[in-house]
Image 1: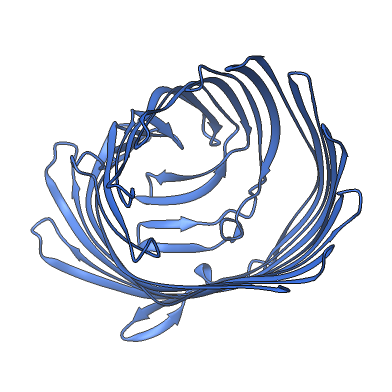
Image 2: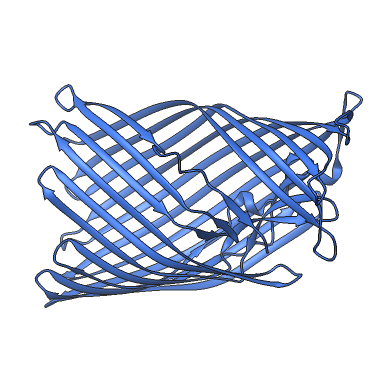
Length: 501
């Protein structure tokens, strides 16, 4: 009567294999091809993951409830192996040399997040909710990279080896209060405030293996301290009358950030105040026809890992760089649409991104290096038209179809020229779901997803067809479930991408 308790545990053991072919054209100062690097990369991942979810509610009385929830992830075993073979060719495709690069990483990680929640219900149907949250996250990666180099006669010439050890510890503390007040049967008002504090402590050490001994590489060893404080407040008002519904909201955030690179003795600070309004309006034109429109402004902050000024080596020529100068990305989202005849929805949308955060490969033609770096784009615009059809031909068959025609334009100035790319594309889903047998305990689902040629972070991705067939059967009086699924039935899911800017 007073207690509700739920505990869930899951364990996953999996291996994932991926093969990838890359071609990189290195250019001279006249943009003529000097070298062509063709690589075959095989990646294998082995992992064991434990997940634990806990929820406890105590009903103090009819108006007061206290809850404790916690989610834990523990990764005791994670092995990541990359085997790379790269052939270096001249512009006429004559063999010049090659190298192999084997990368073996072992990770350990845990992540525990807990919430303490108190809710009080007032006599006037209003309620107050207080929430305190704490997250602790710890991550460690031990990496070894070993390379062999061969000359134009494919004769071994030399080898190189290095180790890296990276750690990241993160603590997140938040506190928030939410108050909800039903003003009448047709209107309500909400207000709330939230404070969050994030602290991360990261470091990376690179050790070159020279004559069997480890030697610290000071240029690629670093420590990074990051602190982020966000104070936010919001209010929201909704109202319904006749055949109209309106929702008005406003959120304001004050953010203070400090990132300190200990080894480089560099400090980056950001302080900004932002306003985020939202508005939605809908009208019931007829019994089965309605129209609606909405606008919302939102923010996406850089991840803590992207802000780390570290260099992670996939091999000696391919690295992943952090960017401590990243700033938040803002999105203005406009939408207008209509629902009619119960089964149809037609919608148009427009999204304008300011400083969209993407990870782009930057090519250095002098050093023959590729560096994957998170970057703020100057501008990104995404607009399109969506059509949705959701229908039950019978009471055991659901037919769902959605298609979207959209255009993405990305713009950026990389310091050596302004680049703008634009691409129209189509995204469509056809899904058939069937419930079979008298008790409907057997379910079959076939989903086909078409992704047309599209633009993603200055990369052109060719057409793909995703397919999945799944069958599930409930057992033990619907207390258990057996399921089987097959994906990529037509083998058309491989991603072929090209990049040039």
